[in-house]
Length: 165
Image 1 (cartoon, rainbow, N blue to C red):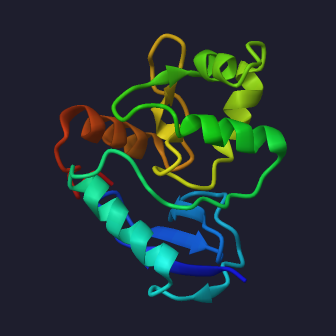
Image 2: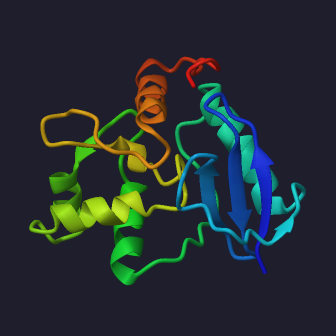
């Protein structure tokens, strides 16, 4: 059984989804990977309410790491990439090549990019911290404007403006 709720953020409405085992999704409203069937709406579900609270702390600059059980579904390769994403430090960025090296497959930069784009848990599994080899911002399922603002928030420690979208 899955449960979901909506969570307001300075970057727009987010949909959160969890099972009894952990958080399995955090999407902005424009993301195409948002599933059609979300389960039962339950804003009081313990994992969802804790996720909402931790996201609020993150956006206010009070939280740099998340402490939530994660239960994203994907291939073994995707899950390995997503797990490695959680090791990228707050306000740091890695290239797709660095991420490929970190998973032990230096030749897999493109495959890492595809797995990164399928990450169902925005922000908490910080795929926004992956950039091009030259440091330029590249695709983000939540939108490039959101990616830029998330990185700015982390670098400056200031609240992300609510009028960015």
